[in-house]
Image 1 (cartoon, helix red, strand yellow):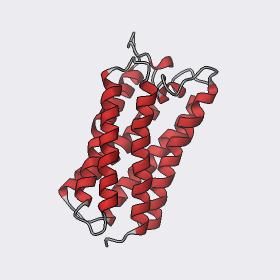
Image 2: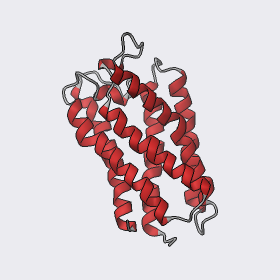
Image 3: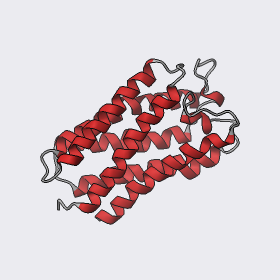
Image 4: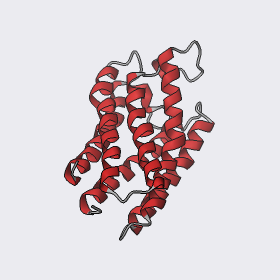
Length: 208
């Protein structure tokens, strides 16, 4: 794929994720972006959850997966970059598809009382995403330091990855806490902000 197509894969992937994340809470009178998971807005039993999943999060995952694998063809090759990009594509791209196909139970069943198979799959892939994706950003950041004129992007990658890692740890350490929604959104926001900047980097630089 050329740079323009890859750029739009990244931008649209981010937008298809951000839009339902922001609008999903409007289904509920007392939904809190501070204390509730994003997943609660498209869980089983929600009014518009199926539309959010199949018109938002699942397309986002497909686009992000394609973006990540396409970037590999446009950037200088290294083993560190390969691990970072493919890890990002699998755990953020395919991971987003998976949690969309397997939503959590209503309310996200935080106590895991008689959880459905879908809930267990959702939790597994969600947990792996938050553990692995921040490290992928950091790996891409260190790998990109070897490219010409990439100091700002490299620094941004390491900073965004570090922020995402910190708040992922806060989120995973207390999934019943009062600020889980905030921690999750800071984590996701760091990753998506990085993704958008990465898309612009791909568009504006030539390594082939």
